[in-house]
Amino acid sequence: MRFEILERDGLARNGVLEIDGVRHPTPAIARIAWEGLPPTTPGLRLSPRDAAGKGDIKILQSGFAPGAGRPDLDGAIDPWYRGSPYAEARPEEGFAVLDNIAKLLLDSPRFVEAVKEAKSGPGLLKPLYCSLAGMPHRLALLAYCGVDVFDSLPLIMASETGRYLTSTGPLEYSALKDLPCTCEACRSGARGEEALLRHNFATAEAELRLVSHKISTGSLRELVESRVRADPWLVQDLRLMDMDARGLQEMHAPIKGAAFHAGSKESLLRPEIVRWQTRLRERYRRPEGASVLLLIPCSAKKPYSLSQSHMRFRDAIFSSGRGPLVHEVIVTSPLGLVPRELEMFYPAKDYDIPVTGHWDRDEQKLAQDMVSWLVGTQKYDLVISHLGDEREAVADVLGDHVDTSGGEPGSRASLDRLEQTLKERCPQPREQGRAGRVFQDLRSVCRFQFGRSGDEMCEGAQAYGRWPFVKVARDGSQLGMLTADRGMVSLTLNGAHALARTGDYCVEIEDFRPKGNLFAVGVEGASPEIRIGDDVAVVHKGEVRAVGVARMCADELRLAERGEAVHVRHAA
Image (cartoon, rainbow, N blue to C red; front, side, top):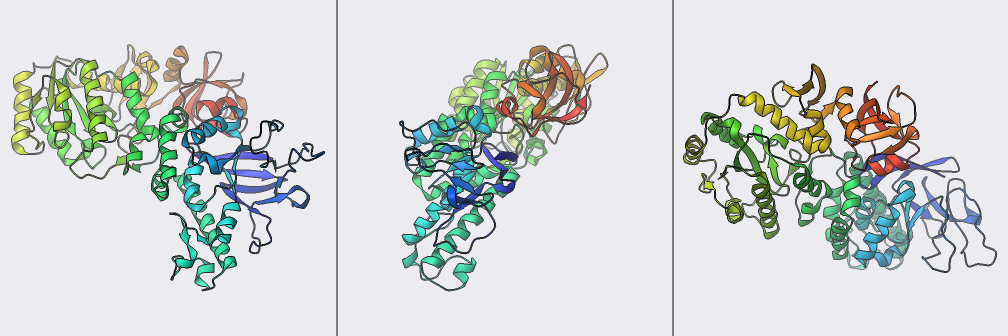
């Protein structure tokens, strides 16, 4: 058996499962060889060992049966152990299995621990099998947690008990006067167990195709947040995944992902949002010389600086003549804070939220905590609040500050008040002016992106160009360039040396020089902070051999033996 991962969205994968030379796309539902099934169609099947065909998943005999043994079969699985402490240990090869999943879904802490165990160590690269749980409304969450293969047992059981399955939960078949589906079985007008079974299969397969599409586009999380509403237990499972498996999820969340809508309470704990807040607290320092904090509201248009409201804010700032001293920080849900120089860094320009004009308690607490951290650690000479709906929520944690908005940040009177306050309360900026500020803003981005290596890269360097297309160079050699599409600094080989000196964001390879993209077979190790989409240095014993973009997270880079590891931009 061979499993190849083709696309990733967090823990979810689109892949190919090869058994006996037969290739099956995943995620997939394995149809059980059952007399009541409709005529078979091409696809994955789950069959008893003695009746299995080529390419089937083979169900082994119970380990407790006399002389059962453990034959070496391609694509074999032993779902009948049920986690018994008396059974033999499951073999290292083959599938990873979520045992007792039907019970675990009703015991969220144990469910989360089971997912963490399945996704740690070598099991991370195995196809994850889950029996008895693949109801259509659960497929999105389970795929989000990394399940690759389901079986059709719950579809058969639902048909026998008269449950009409939908993507938003089961319905009572006998109570439906008109069938709310246009699948072939429902269009036929036939009623009965066979027609219900055909419908349930069609619904599950359609939902799994949607899940696969969402994985391809990097937008599975939004589907999950909508689907879990069908069952309070699923909401609980997702929330505890976000809280208790935060590190696991963040490890697999790409550093540059798809745009998303943050439309529910669960959106506040998306791994990329939690990562943003954590990086601010751990890596962020305000640009040197930007001693005046100006808090402003977000805008619907992203990046914010392209919105009309932010253009008016910036006109007032520059008209005051104090622009280089002002540090603009946007207060927004669900990120909390977005410093102006980071507004293109994912997910700051890639999220959207419903706007009601009212912040709930969770949003208020988030804003208060982040603003309190900012003013308490960055040591500004002056704090100005030019906020709207967020004004009252953060006023108590600002301490001594000036309110220039009066709750109406876009009005002409408040903009004039902002300009006048800057003129009266701020000194004239130093001679370095805007050019020096551009470099400090770029240094802030590098530090946020690379941590200490970002500081290392910018030491003794200069910035060239007009924001956001700014290059960083030292002694005439370009180290990297900020790009608007990624919102990140793309490194050159010279820039990669800064990573190699600290050992951060480095992929260690065997002694060869990449001639194209780097594949996992040549990787010997990876530093733990690497995420999918990060710029990384490809090194051998400290010598830079290439620089490029990581296609796997740190754990996969260390474990994988196939697949593209780094998309190489420059090779030495």
